[in-house]
Image (cartoon, rainbow, N blue to C red; front, side):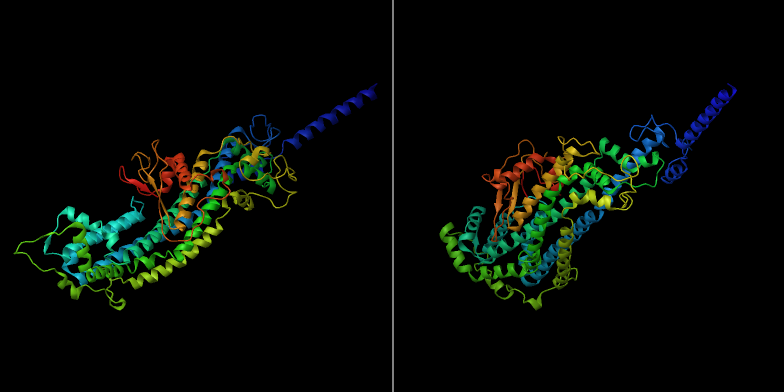
Length: 574
């Protein structure tokens, strides 16, 4: 009996020792976790030295853990912050490209336009003297309207250029027939004969075609750079939903709670989490690629037939040639006007009975290229040619950067995971969401609808992100504008109210927005402005669809697309 009792005591003792040993093996040290947690900038107050029971955890495994509830909350916030920073860092170079190239192109264009005006003013002052100064506002208004168009104002280029030549005809007609008195009604009749008489020869037609195509391409291109910048900036500020935060925390910091702070996620595990968190961004990719392709088309135009420098640089020469043509044909023009509008009343005896064409005989001549004056600032247009060549090199650079940005949004999840700080290359020595080991689930495809089977992130595929959808629509509108600009066409959107934009810039559509649109056509090869796979819309004119899309987006697209708010009740033309 004593022997039996001794055996029982021995067994009990071994059991106690075994339990004690087992407890110590479960309650492992949290020293590595404390060190890694502190390195993140968190306080070690209330951070356990040994593992504790994990029933309090809401994201990570509830077994023995090195995390308190407070630690898990802080790691939740840290996961969200690191994810947001990673998206911004990954898109930084692409966003910077749009910002810097937009600024450079814009500065160059405005400098070119400003110096062209100064060159014309200097040349015409020396060539035509007082007569030019007395009619200065006609030429000032031309450049003012060109600048206003480029900066987003409501200017119909063809109508504006027609108005310029009509005003110039009125002024020239009076100067060449100064022995007569002309009423405002008579001068209005004169202007109606501009197209029929062609008093300035073929210069107005050629200049109109060149200016409209070049300015449409330049303005649309710089708007495209601005839209690309704004869309990229907005999309890069990702909206991190709670389900994504949980998945990120589980992937990045639940290894801390398991006492393995140095363990990184498995590559495919990271891919699933990132594709779930960036599902809406990936849906932007298709429209983004169409937008980039359209930007490249217009860039080709700017390098070639729509070269803006070739239009602006000789504009003073062309206008001077037109004036010379008018002078040479003044008798025929006057005779036809008198026949159509009636014989004007002569001035009194005290006024000059002769025309002032004699005053023009010496002075109305264009400069030869080698005689061209420098601008008031001492900068010749030869220097601007150097600037333009630099700009052409910049356009080539922009094209390369644009090509690199294709498929950016669909590749973004994998690009983030490819960074060393997020994943472990050894698929056997990585965190698989539970422990160290291989990750077996398949990687889902990118895009919102494909996340229905995502094993790591709960994604509601029935609720697309509103901001992303707005940016998709903004890109669609801009892409159509670019394609029309490639063809030499401009699209005008009527503005029914000056309340259309909450940002104070651009031109938005309110509930009263119509689907009216106007094309300004020029001679250029035509490509389709709408994608051929949109068969359901094939029977509807593309401009109608575009305007309807514009109205659907409303204020958001207006804020993205239009840098300057048009005057009240003005027709906005985009």
